[in-house]
Figure 1: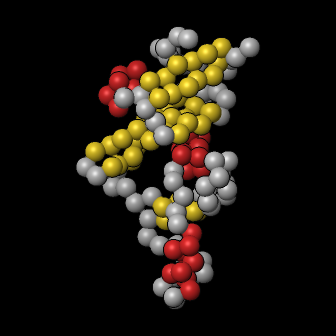
Figure 2: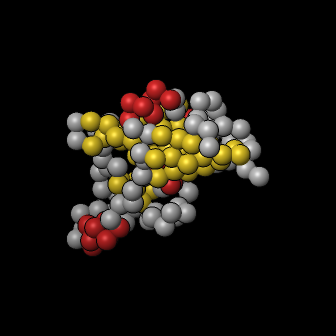
Length: 136
């Protein structure tokens, strides 16, 4: 299994260590999602997508953690939120229910998060290792 040193081709697959989740749109370069954990950034997800916009959509739908929907419903029941409102730092997933079984709302209050084109240097800096394999 060779280590990633160039963009993947459409006939290759990848696995990664050092991230919580991965998502593969099937073609395009790899994008590393970095999320804030206190004062530092940590590698949360790795996505293969054709453009930054496609990769960000995959991060929203498949990588970010779901919000506690019970808490949102309780806030609505207490009259703290209107039925069409969400608490600060919460928003709807762009494509509804993701394939990873997480709910339809995202709770994202990090002070800093980034989505950057993956490079071996970036992987080394954040402890992310990627291996690609040819698809038979």
